[in-house]
Every structure is written in structure tokens, then in C-alpha cells.
Image (tube, rainbow, N blue to C red; front, side):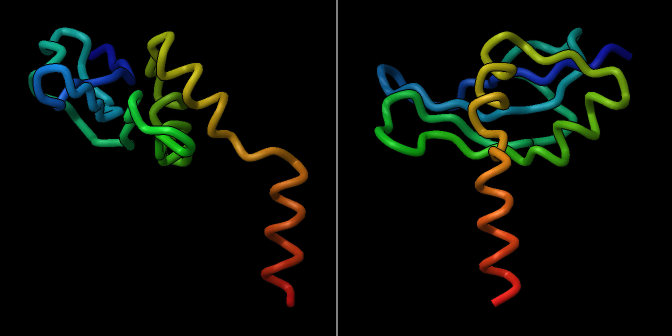
Length: 93
């Protein structure tokens, strides 16, 4: 079974909204999926996506391929080293 992490459109007409899902590549784009990993709203300003990076890494470790759009969203969502240091400092206080 070849797994792909890709976008699944759930928005209405002229209102695009996407869920980020892990799905067998043989399933239809709007069909069955294995797991919901997050969401992406291209019309929203500011923070327009939420991704569970741990689960994306889990699926990648098991051979899943990321679509081009999901790959760019994951790259954008990855915490930077400075953000991680700030989070550790605030947790320690």
C-alpha cells in the first residue's frame, strides 16, 4: 500500500478549505483516507494552517510521500530553533 500525504478539499464552491490527510494513493482525492493530519485555509490571512508534525513524521518514517503543496506547508510550519528555545524558557519559568 503506497501512502501519500496530500490535501483533500472540503470547502464549498468558491470557498476553498482543505484537510491534510494520509491516504492510499489509489483512493480518490475526495474519497477515503487513513488519518486526518491537519487543515489549510488558503483564503485566511495570518496563520492559515495547522499540521500535526509528529504524525506527518510518523507516516514519512513508514514510507509515505508528501505532495508538493503539503511539503511546502510542512516546511513553513516547522518550528525554528529560536522558537524551540523560547518555548523551553517559558516552560521552565
